[in-house]
Length: 141
Image (cartoon, rainbow, N blue to C red; front, top):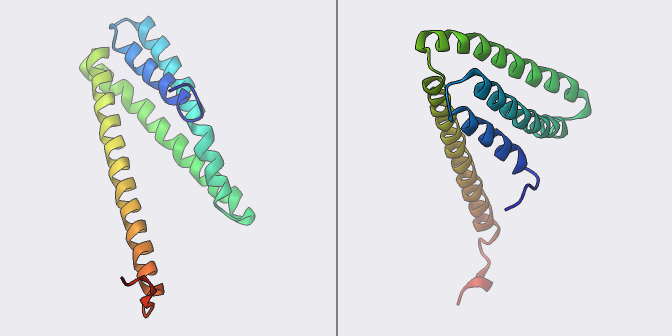
């Protein structure tokens, strides 16, 4: 429990998303989007810092610039298409339900990839352990 590192930003974003589903008024949407934005900004800082730590100092500026550029272009595309989707649907509740569906699919895809990567890492470690124990009869009963 608690609002420790990694938990607060998800709770703020989730609360904002849930807040927007309470009703169809513009005020609820604006408050919800503000809360989602705060959570998103908190979520943006950590990964940006992580990207900067996994590259050499000579690569760092290029990688951070590329990462930020891709993120901002993606946000721009979704901001422009979001208004078109809302205009076609004309309902905040349906609009938010679509966004929650897309977010859920994205989260499931990320989780599946994470599990696949973890399994691949474990199998590589197991294979490496087997190679280092070849010819070693000390682990036989």
